[in-house]
Image 1: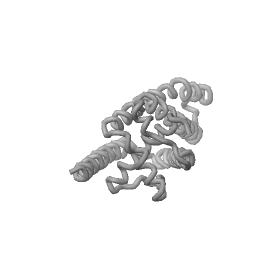
Image 2: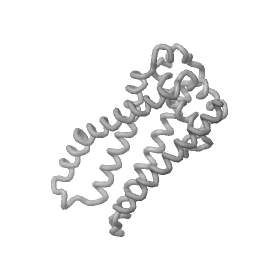
Image 3: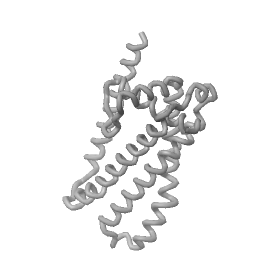
Image 4: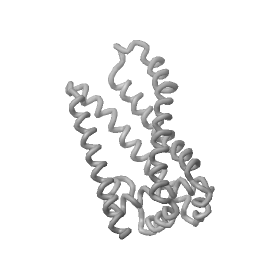
Length: 202
């Protein structure tokens, strides 16, 4: 396993360990006791500050990839497939949107993680990471988990949009509520994780 791939796995492990230490679970991402133990070893060389920087850099790169995808892939395809927007069916447009989302997350996220780890994996960190038997299988499992969740999300996107259209649902208030709920839950999650980490360090 290359040092770059091992570094990406280590950054992923750092995030998953933080979730586990916060007594939380991420549905769709389960691991055996041996895999958790290995991820703790991989995450050990990564400090909290470097991991936070990794998440921010990864987010910026991923957003840039998504924006590029809209301009270079989604809009050209939509223009080609649906030259008359007023005559575009909801099913066809939803299918194109779901396919684009799957493409961007399935390909864009691994690319952003690869670039972020290349930028932030220091020489000292790489030196502290030693590949072991089973690391490639663990990395493949993580990749499959990401693709599986992405496929489920994009699969639910199509019927979700169609239901909103069929029942003439005003999505504005619903989306606004869900956004604020997500922000509050994320803030609570971060606060609880930070508090528990502080207690463990004392």
